[in-house]
Image (cartoon, rainbow, N blue to C red; front, side, top):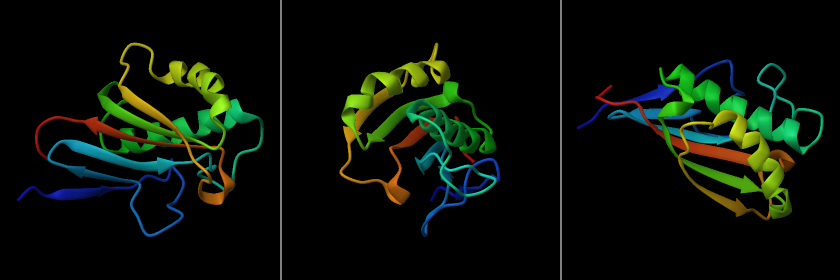
Length: 131
C-alpha cells in the first residue's frame, strides 16, 4: 500500500473546511481547490477579478512548492468560475503561471463557490517516484 502524506504550508490559506491543502501519494500530488484568500489574513483579497485569479494561482503554486514540486509538474488543472464570461480574463492571468508547461485543463462555471469566491483552482501534479 502506498503511503500518503499531508501537504501543508503557511504560504497558502488554511482550509475553510475539513480537508488538506494537498495530499502526496505515490508521486502524485492532489491539490485542493484554492480560492483567492490571503494566506496571512484568511480574508478574500481586494481588487478586481485578475487580482483574485492571481491570488488563487499563487495559493495553488505555494502548495505545489511545499510538496517539493513546481508548476512545471502540474498535469491537470480544474478551474471553477462563478461567471464563465470571465474565461478570457482568467486565461490572461493563467498564462503568467503556465507558460511552457500547459497542463490538461477544464473550466467550469459554478453556481456558487466557497466564501463567495469568483474563482477556485485545483490541480494534480506528478512529482515522480514514491514518497
